[in-house]
Image (cartoon, rainbow, N blue to C red):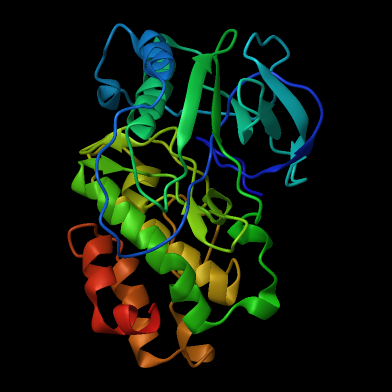
Amino acid sequence: MPRCSTTSEDQGQGQKVTKPSGAHPSTASKESHTEKAIVNPKVEANLKRSIAPQVDEESLEHDLVANDRLGASVDTPYEKLGHIAGDGQGVYMVRRLSDGKIMASKVVNYHPSHHGAMMMGHGLYTWSHLNHSSIVALHDGVREGEYQMCYFMDYLAGGSLTNLPKSKRSYSQALAILAPIMDALIYLHGRGYVHRNLTPDNIVFAGDGRPVLVGLCVAAKFPCISRVGTQGWMAPEIEVGGKAYDERVDSYGIGLILWWFLFGPTHFVDKTAEVKVINWDLLERKKVPKDWKDLFRKLLKASPIKRWTVEKAREHPFVSRLSL
């Protein structure tokens, strides 16, 4: 799995623990959603402490590097049940001792600076106030040692999109999976926030098969300027850096995930180039249907001004029809 300049998540099973990580709710594409306050006031207090004093982290031009590993020193009453997913990520299945609820726990490192802490704190604080069936619910988040954050989320038993067998991949399945994720992004964008770390690892399935969006540690109010994301999955404007960007970086991310889902990691002509070029010739060689070629070209425009928003792509009759 790609090394993240941010965070991605997965889940697993078994033993005795410590800190909270994230959680996944899941489901549905077209439902009405209402804002919610954090259920546990202590969660909000923890997150507020982790980001005080407030700063405008989006004025910072630096990389946030978050390597996953479980911290050893934790006071939180959680029992660690085991590692999740088996991909080397620091994500664990845990049991909350107060009520026996099974959740997922993740500890992430952030950029070793005051600004890195602000960015991670703002991301978790934003996440804690989201309420959508296709966005994993964040239950708790605390600072853990130097340059580390630990958070707890809903446990999703279905594994990540990365691990979905190739035999189950088709055009109709691609949109059936991505439509609820697009709805979650439309919800997020409608509140002025951008995910900016869309990868197959950050789409996880609930036990009943519903796709859920995770990895919102670095969600931020747009316009943004920080160079944040996972190498190989960033929109050109983030990759190059130096200029403000908006929610259309997530459109690019959805386009890359759709391409990867259908054709594998073949979306770039040269993966090592500083400025990535989409491998458009592949669409001709694969004899991709006309509507799909059009969708890819709208979502993967190098220029964000010409690129479709996720909302526009979701409303396209072709997408709506196939995702029902």
